[in-house]
Image (cartoon, rainbow, N blue to C red; front, side, top):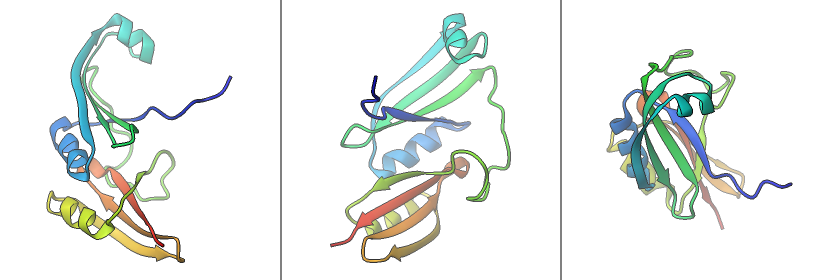
Length: 144
């Protein structure tokens, strides 16, 4: 048994439209959006009776971000919205980009906050951005 590839990462959100627009502005494509509900979905994820709207977004090479907005049961906020990078748990998603300056400018025009940027040796230019609901995205532009 081997893992073939990562298919997607799930992010539970409160404002689905704002977060979806953020990832589309980054360059991901909306693959589809649907509402799922019922006891079978609840059993799958361990929550009882569920109703949620989900949107699947993908990079050009097929990597996925799934955004879920729970209607029932309501989502539970765990910790502060703008948790620091050393908070336990999943902290960021990183994407490789061709032109970090244009991506940063584009995403800032959509209201994202630049946390910081740097060059790592002669390998990468890096930038961290905070989007809606405190979601942190890393950008990496390979050098050379």
